[in-house]
Image (tube, rainbow, N blue to C red):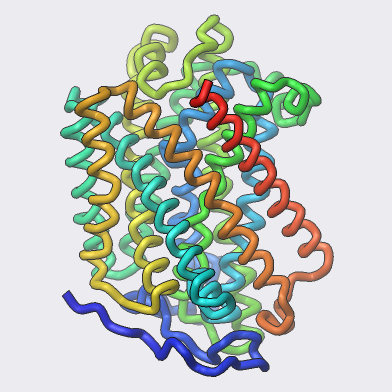
Length: 454
């Protein structure tokens, strides 16, 4: 087990660049600059840059989102579709800023934090990020285990062990090149999308009501219960580890290290993530639409857990509905665990200035998620794992602002970004997004704690 320094930790500040060091070693060195861009038409270049956005998008359709989308649709019909849309717009903005930071500065977000903040602050941010990654990983492991239980009647505790280690085999594909891993992720995304397209066809929602649901209403703000679920949807959608991940994996493309080359890379990376996040938006909206058309209209407004939805889908929609739902959940969980462990590797390298063998880092991440999930499944059963899933989303909400605020600050700093600095209108939009996320997630946390105390 070799752990080695990547670069000297105390180089003098580089005032001209705005960073403490003029150069940093790349994260994910095994795939850094491994995908050639070449020349050609717009669509050939778009295809060459396509991939990182899909690795990021899976975090926006992970099992942690399912509970909030199910609750929103079953309790309030199509009303909260506007919140799903708003969350996706925020995600497009933040992921675009993350890819720009990585391309322009050559630093992922973790390296940028280490370069900018004092060591105690950087260590604090690292610990918070590790907690968030563990919480997210916990949600993916539980979601996949629930899917195996629903599909094959494997006990949840055993399913946790299966899904905890099979992702290590999937990540071994990274040694065959990042494009192979990206192809696997896109295939799993397509599986989730097709499953929910099938569910929507079976559910036959009211298209007029669906369209109306994308328009915000006053009730979302003034109805306490609806606001609570809406904030839960927002908090579960934007994942902090995705910002660290995206700022690193965009550097797998071999774009030219010139102003023109970086500008082109920023543009195509933004298109890639926007297209990919559109698929994530479809999945989240589809979960809410199916829940509304199936449960809300039939008087099953109490459905909020994945297992309850599975049991009711076939009686209400017919054969195949439940199996399709569980298959989508399994594909979603497996996809998210792949990207979550990659994010863990990036964060450790970036914040701590060390490099640990990738398989060991992934094993550590797995064990952190597996141990509590197995214990809860054994002693508290399915109900306990459902509550653990909710807890993981609260932890993610708490950490989110500690990733969003540095990202917005760095990309709005001319000394760090040069001509690529956020223009005035984008700074305003980005800071407004950061403040809204911080306030809403703080409110969600307070209300959740009050609920537990009560």
